[in-house]
View 1 (cartoon, chains in turn brown, orange):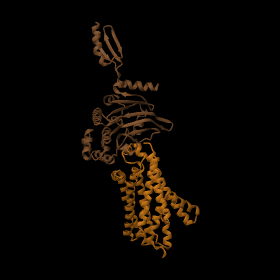
View 2 (cartoon, chains in turn orange, red; view 1 turned 60 degrees about the vertical axis):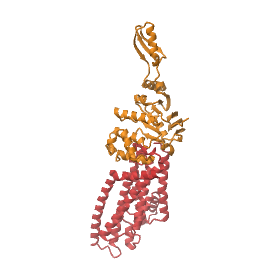
View 3 (cartoon, chains in turn brown, blue; view 1 turned 90 degrees about the horizontal axis):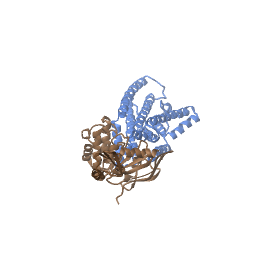
View 4 (cartoon, helix red, strand yellow; view 1 turned 135 degrees about the horizontal axis):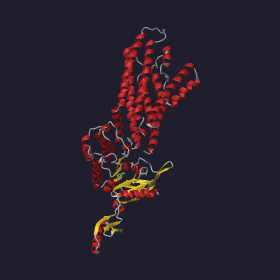
Length: 281
Length: 283
């Protein structure tokens, strides 16, 4: 079996009397894109920070590609974009990337820097100083910085919070590209539609505990088919989208007139709200 | 090692590009201009004064002026060192500057020591250059040269290195502004305590002398500064020697080997403590 890019086992983190994480298990396989969801203060950023060694766990463990989180080997395998970050204002985009190339030991040189800036749509801003960049441009630069040296695990904490719709699409394409190259990604985002579009699995955290987890299509599984006939709407619970043609054919064969068919599949947002509110109650 | 060099070069680059260097540079120009003006006037007036046969007026004025320059260089070096390092840990972490660097495969201790090394090189070079500039100006204007030049320069460099180490240690506990205030309070406390000790010597007060002695132990940058001041007139004897010891920002005391060793241990200890705190800190 392949070694997970990220393996978090019974992770507990307490800040004094407050428990930020209360025994969390998360695994991200190479090439897998996992969305981390949850309300503010749920413990998502703490989980991210523990994975990259910024925060020390109270108990439990976290490992990156088989190495303890925070160790030199683990840090060499990750790329990280913090939720709140700032690059030195006096640096140009190119200088920021060059600094991180040196720190990671990347030998990609100018080609790598140019390719990354191109990928995040900052080709024209190579020599622009950070202090002159918009928040969105800085976030794009942050994403490029996280990808320096082709990390095996990418930890992205709210990578699209300051981006416009075009910027978000660029990031979605980027994530898909990374997935194809076998990079594991843990994506913390409040944009459920974005997570639904790109993630293989989602983990929903609330009050430091996982309240729901699974593949997006499993969580959004059909709850039945609603068919509107001359006798009114009828619910056929347990049926899926694949059952719809046969169901309609059967109803027509039974002499019913079908006006509308609707597969009742919850959006990720419904799943999220149900999980979070259910856990709160 | 390459990570340490990268961080050190980055810090050096930062010190060159940030406005603080321009501010300190501007202050230095103003200071040098005023120094030249004052030195010119002081030596010119000294020529018309007869302080008695036992006092070398030129040495008295020269030593006083260079002592003043040492204080100025130390103060400006402290300003520079504080601005370069006061946010090294907590301040940078709160602003999100530190996290992208810490997650890279460079150890936290390496990162901290590299920042110290870079800031230390900038500040030590700065105080030495300002001091040597003042010595050259004094020699040109009044024809007086200190008895020792290298020892005071090294004393100043060592003093400012300890201040930088303390600033880095403070940055692991305190937010940016609080750390800045703390560094300048320590700087002021050291100088005042040094003066108290010197006055104690003059009036033969053991309590005041003890204040000076213990403050030099607790804040050994003060001992290095006092040692530097003392070396300016180490060969000056007689009444002139006694008077210059009581110079304006004085507190001149010879620097013993034990005090020097303690200053080195103190600086290294401050850095070791900073590294230990930083390595355990959640970011």
